[in-house]
Length: 472
Image (cartoon, rainbow, N blue to C red; front, side, top):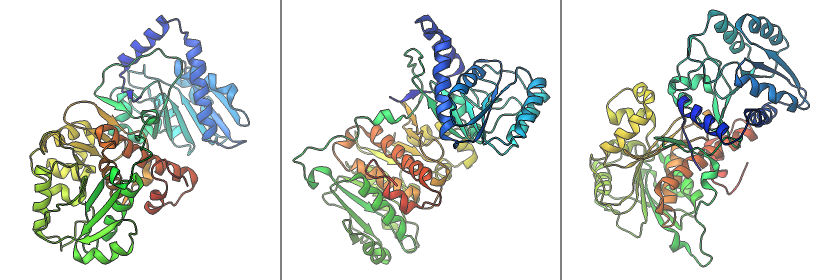
């Protein structure tokens, strides 16, 4: 199940409950050490040097526990009980040019500014050029705020223990955390405090998507209508349609501007394509509607904008809005119990909220809540690093998959199509939050599969790995 985002105080309570249950600190440390060692092996190759930097706290204990399990590598443990000893030892060890540094200098207990000596140690590690695996959080980072205590390790991967900490989700911490992963099943007691945000986990989707009945047919799985594409932006419509296909709804129809009909139709086989005419109200056998990808051309008439507002306000169907169409939305809810979804990136969210993108990034949760409330308690997929999924009230999910190479033109079009493809299916839209979080997670996971397989992949490649159907 999704994981709570736990504060330092909650983590201390979790540990207290664990020790009270009879579990020992030594047993938990041994398990964490195993997780650290396994990840270190994945990040290195046979024969690589691994430098393990261990402070005097439990993070250092976790690193020490990893040492015996680093088979076929060249590990070197550097004890750093204080800055003076640590600086000299690390300086010498860094001369061997390790492929990976395992950072266990400080943990969540750090609550004071670092001395100048410690700052110099951290700066030396950051300047080494080696990949860094930080245990629980990058040393020097505040677990609750994401601010530094004067300096912080710049990790390649942060393997946080038990559950993510709020500081790892703060935009100001992203340059230090690298990829955040969670070391689960380390022997901690059951603990699931109520939190506003929760971290998605692959186990969330163990019984999802819903199974199809053996005797079902294409009419059982919905008919998605996509209003997309205009002069110079036909590719967005094609990518959205192909993203929708990966969700496998029964049927998909694209309606587009006359100028973009031929290039879209030429690239679609199973997807039906037609020209949208001003005045057409999009009546048909649809089960969900996507509006927006590629509707940025000068040939998009005002009638299309009016239609988007009408559908958002009045259609009983799920309506997903992306890209240019976000600017056309009315400040009103849809019909009772209807599904409304917007998928802005931070720049679009900033425009809708009339603020700077930096302000959105500084308070992404607040921005999501405000967008949802402003547009009738709609679902919001606030894209970007650690994409958020939620509404103006209730839990908000933080997506755990994906990597920086998703930052390519067309990636968002694929995602909006994939989301709409799921919501078009009656069985999938019974749980909108799960459908949305699954779509976002699998979109990021597809990128992770490609990045693990080879560099230089494209958005077109992403489509071939989207969902659990195929892999690179």
